[in-house]
Image (cartoon, rainbow, N blue to C red; front, top):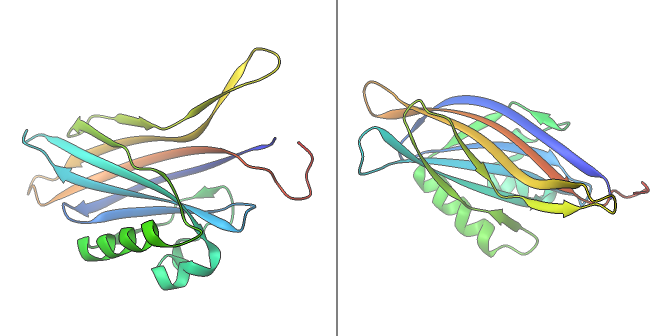
Amino acid sequence: MPVDSFTTHVTASVGWKQTLVTGGWPLSSGKRLFVLLEPATTAESNSVNVRLHSFEIPENLLTGLGLDGLKADASANHKSGIFSAEQTSSLLKTLETTDGVAVLAAPRVVTQSGRQAQVQVVDVIPLPSGQTYTTGPVVDIVPTIAPDRQTVELQAVRNQTCREPRRGHDA
């Protein structure tokens, strides 16, 4: 079965109650793959808690969700958007209750300001040869708290591999 890879590299100044949205990669299923990154403060003043959400969303829902402008034309995407807390809450409630939307992962990671952290939600796939490969999101995140402590600069590099049958292609 073919494996598709998707990448993004974005840097954005995100408020504590805001969400960085990127992705929009096309899947052969007719859906689009999106990732949301939500930074939050922690009890430790120099740490950042980042929650990642991955979703597969049907193409016909994107305009109504405000995601149409983030669609990627290929496997690499450097587009991103910032959603308010209200927009994020509404989007998450809608996505979690809408038929056809797949919630892929929602892990959290805590790291020091300026220090890279990696989030992985992967499956290890064995091959007949005894070798293995992994599929799933791998996101490197570097959150840096701004001097005014009101925003965090989020740098995210996402590599996603999907094991997905492609129509009209042999595995």
